[in-house]
Length: 293
Image (cartoon, rainbow, N blue to C red; front, side, top):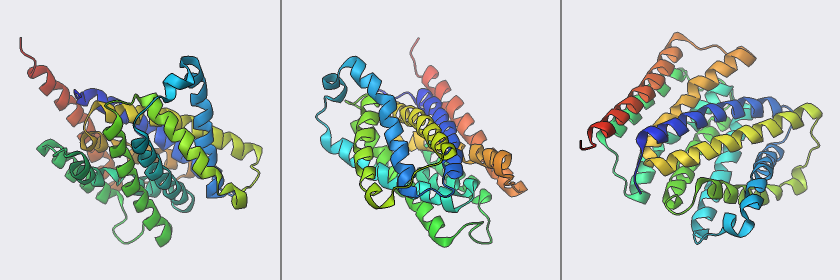
């Protein structure tokens, strides 16, 4: 499958912005609402949004696949990552939760190398290394930087499970279009997340319902963008651009909850954003130069 690093970066950055917005909406909705309800609503809204597309082209065509195992694996790790992520959003400051979840790119090169035999290029290793430096600058070096130890560990676990899920997308994207991958995730995740509602159901207020519905819509858009990104370029490359969610989330947290960034954190955000833009421009230039006249 031919790769397009520039297009992959474009979709990944769109997804990062969408997921940052989703994080803010989920954090607002999580006050007084069980995590199980939030996860189910997010999955169910995604399924509702995608169903008209499936009906328009026909269910048989929309769901026709021979990659059942790949879809189940991607959805299984994805739903576990979602539970961990939403738990962290409800117990940690927004920037801290997003930062831990987006430790995912640090795991991606190793997962992709072991699973897909995609040996990272020197540019990708540099991106991951500098991205880690940028994230380290945004973490409070004195300890947890806010929140609880359990929330911090669960947030980090969401990064690991998310990395496996994203590499799973890359694994099946050579035969499965992005809408089908997202549709199968919505179907499987909605079914799995409905089970805990038997003991965790809570009727949302009107405000909570609006916030959760909006979060589901924004997340579905972000998921489509990210799925397309992993179909365009190697997993380790795309993962580097996911770091953009960290500074975007920090900005939203400042605007909504007055969570401020230190000079150290702003330097880290600038490093991450500059790195992503530079790599995207460099990738496009290399592709142009490699085309014979």
